[in-house]
Image 1 (spheres, helix red, strand yellow):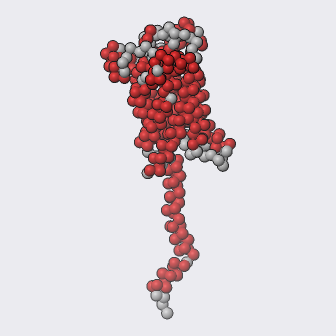
Image 2 (cartoon, helix red, strand yellow):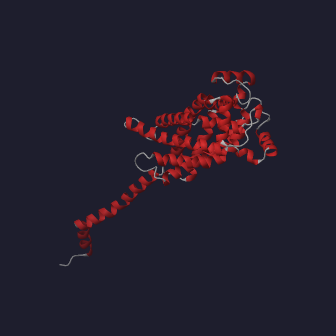
Image 3 (cartoon, helix red, strand yellow):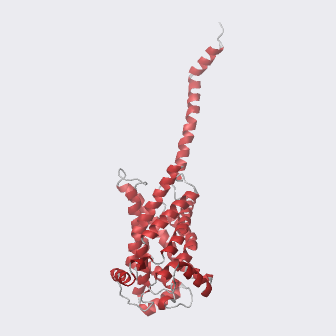
Length: 333
């Protein structure tokens, strides 16, 4: 008796070959899903705009929180140049500012910082993430050259955005600043010195920040890897303690080794202000020679303590805020 159509369908369904084929078809989308999940994880599941937003918020939080320490560093680096004491300490500088100007003196120029930090860090982190991916920094393992190179490229781009507001900020931070505020400083600089005055220190800033950022990012990624290897059961890459510890260590190391260039940058940005010396050119070498000749080698380390005191917690705040921002944006998608 001939098989019915339903019997043939049933036999086909129960055949081992058919079963295996159906299993493969069933599992294929799952395999694609796992692959796609890994791919998303590799890229944090975020887009360029997400990195910009998370970086902007992180930069604002970092610099606003640590602004008083930045003011102390600027004042200490400019003391001898403006005819002040060469032996001021962090505590002495703090007492002097609060006593003569009040607590508000520690926040002079914060408006310029607010305008510059957000956009600059948006560029900073987004360029870093893209370059790190392109250079293979997201591959399994530790890639210090990729992380360092990505950081260097990021700072060249972000400094082009941040330098003008950094110049304005530092001029407003000086004790005897001739400017009444943010807009007055910008307008006066444009009228008296021209647009180029906003970028006088850009080459120095890049020369300083390229090694700073290369050391910073490479140290940060290395510290994260080390922490996760030391205690794999208690911490992972998303753990807040990892970002705080790794960020703080990276900030301390990078800021310490680049302090001499930061002194030169501050002197160039604030030259002629409040009686400070002027330089014949924006050459880093010429500036270093003159500073050393007039004040000694120790002048290049002025502001080391407040700079490290600034960048250690600032980097911890920045990285933890940035990573938290990425996690939040990833969860929102």
